[in-house]
Image (tube, rainbow, N blue to C red):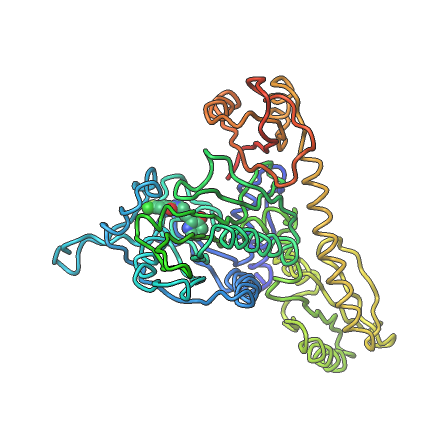
Length: 485
Ligand code: 86X
């Protein structure tokens, strides 16, 4: 068997995205070398191809928060039990997921240590020591780390694993107004991660009382709807109010000489973003990477024939050098693989642009560029290459965004009564309905609909509110319901 034939049996997907999306997803992440399963159940390996995507997301968001005045720091991953339990609201329901360190060698620890599931408690214990007066505020610290939540549902790479990477921002303000402003500022940055970087439209809104983080005063969120017909939270920005300030004694002496409780926020974005991106844009050929996060922007594939081989390779290297000033470009000059085979492999890996250079192109001083999203080919002159690549990448970003936006629009269905609600559930729509705001009524909807939860109360609300879709009482808001990840 020739070398390429051997590998041929392992590349390419054996299922269609629409027909078996979970098998499609599993094949995509492994065959593209994004991630791999590990010996530790529920944990994955972030291989370089996905870690580079995370690095790009990280750099984008990190630049935004630094510009806004947030500093990065690092806190211990071990949280003494007594500290974790200090604010009861936020641990309620989560305790079965906490992983504990109980021993050092054979010696039992005097107090067991949680491996952080989130860092509120360990950070706020320090904050209470650091904050004395209004001069110490605002205090705005972020950390990039990993957290552990021992989930018992089966793991889905990027979307649900026992350890995942994220950033968690934890900030302290003198007033509720300042805290509230930041909640929305950060939510805007999250929306930009999705829209400007990942080409994914999101809906900004507030969580209902039942769905908010239990330790928060209120929670805001960016939500989207995947082609697998499930809603998913992209990131979240909470105003914690004074709940943790009370539990951790975070007080400051204000300008007026009075001692006051501080106002706090916390906010997070995780490697789940990568899973959302895969599911939103991928197709039957594999990954489709939005250009601004793709680890490889373009791959140059020379179409080699004996006579023109040297000239072609020389030119291909020149073009690579030129494009490498602005992009990450790969030249696939492997001699033992046919061009068609290479096309398939780079399509599977979702590389935004394929640049073909053949003997005809040498004569015409041009290349042929194929876009991953549409497959459309365009001839671009060598002298216009940078401009051409730049244009095609921007067009691709826009097209991916518009396609996802159209999908979102056609997924949302406004319903007026319970009959319409259940019809929309049956059609797997993102159900938009007026609701009374009562938590028991929300729980009834979940039960009667086979598990639909509220995703968010969109910031954009209708001018007039009608009646609650279930109980018929006057509505308090319009809200989105769906099966969610
Ligand atoms: C909630 C809240 C919050 C900072 C964020 O959503 C963004 C970044 N943190 C996280 N949460 C928990 O508080 C929690 C606590 C325990 Cl003890 C646990 F085991 C799991 C948890 N999961 C989520």
